[in-house]
Image (cartoon, rainbow, N blue to C red; front, top):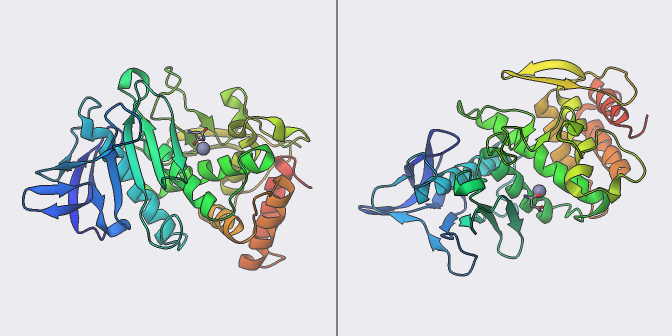
Length: 332
Ligand code: ASN
Ligand code: ZN
């Protein structure tokens, strides 16, 4: 933490946390001076236009409950800080564009709005308050997912349709999981689920499952020739599944108290190389190999090239990454 001020955030999903803020005396703003000046704004249930920068007299943000308008701000700012720190400290990237510039977050978008999104045009993320304006889409993994869309735009810029669109979505889910694990927040431990905290379906189930993507219904576990005609949030499935398999291996496993079962397309077992290596390979492939039109075959080629550069062409890492791709029906 290198913020000018270390304010206190009372978040809805992650407990009491430290937030980077700015100001002095009895005037503080939710501007994270230590992270490129990332700013958090209030849309007050409206639409973008005249957002208000969160400001206050005490450098304490939110009370942990959604009715307090600073609570979603505290979650969004915390998640943005964690994502910034992950890319900087783990992947060596200084901000979304790599130029040290902070982005901004806007919370309380619309009324009962159950989505969140990244926009290049404002270099910003926008979050709805979810069902009954009580489930804001500001949990760590959702924030990391949206912010990673900014990183993808600034790097490979994977076109948001067809197979490249699925890979764009998977990139956001992969780093959502990586950030959540890296954060190690006791109230929101790392997992291979996406959106398990925001109850977007109203029945407590997560939005997506990386060990077996089809558990959500429409997501695909394995590549097939017309995968690219699916919605990008479903064609992401095989790449999310690849990340799980490359990290943890196939079959049954419990991580941080969450039980997984990951199948393979050919029934052959896969051994993982660990999450940190899998995430490093994906990040380096995203930033040095992938292009706007990379498809699943290209993602396989890119990750294998990176694995060979990092660990050697005849390394176990290359063999296991190859096996993980074969397990999602990409190559053999
Ligand atoms: N929350 C969604 C996402 O980031 C919004 C969208 O469909 N682009 O993927
Ligand atoms: Zn997305």
